[in-house]
Structures are given as structure tokens and as C-alpha cells.
Image 1 (cartoon, rainbow, N blue to C red):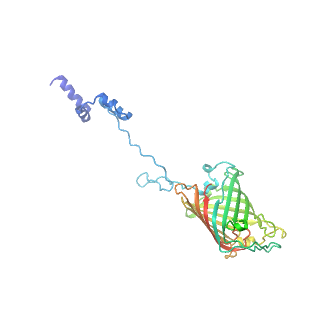
Image 2: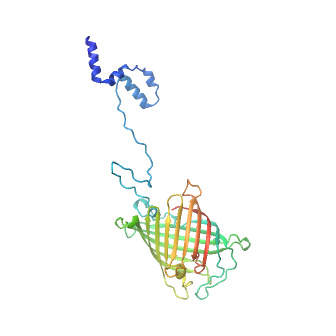
Image 3: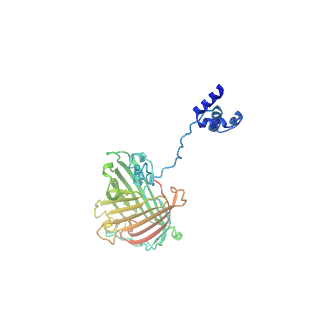
Amino acid sequence: MKPTTAAALALALLLGPAAVLRAQEPARPLSDCAALSDDAARLACYDGLAGRARPSAPAVPARRTPDLMAAPEPIGPGLQGPPVPHPSFLSKYWELDEADKRGTFNFTGYRPNFVLPVHVSTDINSTPTSPARDRSGQLGNFRKVEAKLQISLRTKLAENLLLPGGDLWAGYTQQSFWQVYRPSESSPFRSTDYEPELMYVLPTPQGLRALPWGWQWRYGMLALAHQSNGQSEPLSRSWNRMYVGGGLERDDVSLSVRYNYRFKESASKDDNPDLVDYRGHTDWLLAWTPGRATASMQWRTSFRRWDRGSLQFDWTYPVEPDNPRALRWYVQVFSGYAETLLDYNFRQTSLGLGLTLFEF
């Protein structure tokens, strides 16, 4: 065997089968490599002509947007990663967690802001009464079909006040009932209520949040509020109160509770001494916010008379399903006492249909 042949055979044995196969491939001209537009492919072509093996890169998994609602993926046999935290509606609403803080004096929504062009009641209170002296009057014959409007805003006045995470808020709500379908009578506003509030909201410390059955206690609240209808006697109605409350949540469901303590007034100034007996002093609000649709049920009661107080159901759905933060369809059903201050001792059932802006 010639020396050159022996050297070639030894080299082939050292490089292995891949080298033998590569030696059998027909050589590509350099012009083929230069014609490749992809940088990685062109470099691989040159490396192939030079006999240089390129290591294969490990496959990179495609990135995906995390789904906060999905269960955690397993990380090994019998093992599972840490649970994915469910987004907190109450934290985003009241800016409880540090990540949700947005600073002060940013005006945002408080209670629902809506326009209900159709609001139908089973009856209209045309002769409002009160046990207070000279507080009964005559309104006239209003129609049972009217419009209902509500504007409700709030802003944070101070952040991290007094206690860690404690915020001071100011809120304002105005609700009106408009006899828009009575053009012959200049379409008057039948009733308007005004309600300013001052609220101190304190997030629950992490170690105290856990409650049975997966519930979380998220915040406590102390507030002052005034509500009046801005009318003169005999139709004037008003009350001042302090309330304490708190909020619980479990996944998409939240429960807010408030207990109202009404400040006493002198008999000569009290427009409605029995208001709490009809309206109730406790507010329970159960809300469901799974995604596009939202629903809530509010119950007001004094636990003394089960035939008094009220129930109110609210439901919304986006007009454009792909844009849930814009306009939403709004349905409201109310049954009981005190849909307005003027009707605090008048029982009625009403249905409202319209639009709302779900934003905070």
C-alpha cells in the first residue's frame, strides 16, 4: 500500500463515518453560498465547504402569553410548580397592593356610571310623605317610564397615610330620574340625589388575609358620607352617616359589606327620622367579574323587618366583545324601598336598560 493511500485511510478512520460521508458529497461552488440571503444559511454553507461541523442549536420553545386563569404546569414526575396567583379585582379597584398603586388625584370611576334611557317602575311616588312635620308634598302625575342617570367619581387624596398601604379617598355620586318622555311639561327631573364621601381604605396585612374555603380578606374601610336631594321643604330629604366596612374575595367573586351609623339630628332639622327603618343600615354587595360579563347583587337590610330594605341586580356586557373597557350594555333591576331619597318609604320595583362605562 502506498504511503499516501495509508495516510488517507488512517485519517478517515480518525474522523469517523460522518467524515467519510461528507467526503463523498459533491462539492458546492462558492457562488451557491454567496447567493443565499439568510445569514445563518449562508454561514452554514461556507462551513460545509470548509469541512467545519456546526453544532446544532437547542430548540427554543415559543413564547406565549401567560394565562392567569390556567392551572400551573407540571415541572416533573409528581411535581408541580407554584400556583399562579389569580388577579385581584378588589386590589385593582382600591389599589391595595403596591403593584396597583397609581398615585394621588387621578380621577376614576366609583359606582357605576350609566345612562338608562328606559327606566320603568311599577308605581311612581306622586305624594312623598315623612313623619317629620311639614315634610309631605304633592308632585303631580309623573309617568312610570323615564330615564335614569348616574355619575360617580373618586380620587385618592393621600397615599400610605397613617398606616402602611392606607389611602384616603374622596368620592361623589349623583343620581337623577328624568321625565324625558313628558315634553309637554318641559321634561322635568323628578328626583336627584347628591352624595359626597370621604373614605379611608386600609389593605389587610398578608398574614391576616386567609379565610376558610379559599376566601381572602382584602381590606377594611372607615368613611363619612352625606346624602341629600337638594330640595327645599316639604320635599327635602337628607342624612349624615359614618360607615365601617370591608371586602372579601375568592377568584372572580367579591363581597363588600358596610354598616351605616346615622348621626342624630334635632327633630326640627330631621327630614326623615325613620329613613334607616325602611332603607336599612347594612349594605351587602356580591359581585362577579369573570371577564367580559359582570354581575352584582346588592342587598340593603336592617335585619329587623324582612319586608323592608331592597335588592338590586346589575348586569353588564361590552357592546364590542373585543373591547370590554369601552361602552357596555347595562341592565338594572331594583325592588324594595329607597331607590331615591324621596322614595325612602315607598316600595316599588323597576327595570332599567341602557349603557355604562366600565372603567376604574
